[in-house]
Amino acid sequence: MNNSEFMELMNELGIPEENIIERHEPQDSLKELQELEKRYNIDTSDVVNQNSNVDLSLISKSVFEKWLNAFDSFIEYHGDSSLIDTCKNQYVLPSSSSQEAEFVNSASFFVQ
Image 1: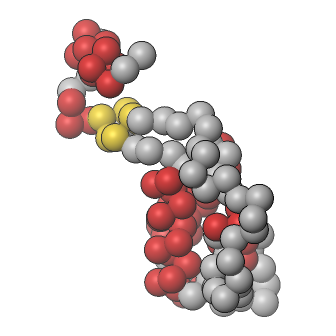
Image 2: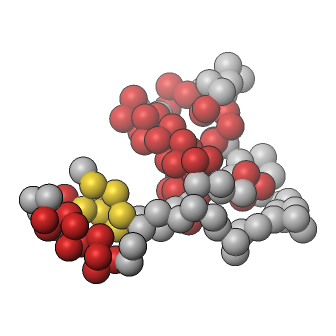
């Protein structure tokens, strides 16, 4: 199904266009995770695992939930985990087996 067919189907179902968000996964969730890591200087794995050695009190409940949702989307769409956890590994390049350019099961739209 292409984008125009999808939009036509949503219109037929009575779903307003403003309730449809275009997303490209796992690229969008990766960007979101990297931005959160940079803003809070905390690795995603520390948030997901609730690492007791990291002060997670700096993160509000809504940001924590946003972080977990982005991580879930990233994993669900087969994101390359070597591209996250950039705080501890900020000087380490992604592995040569990285498939950054080869995303599978990409999703273009989500309905709210």
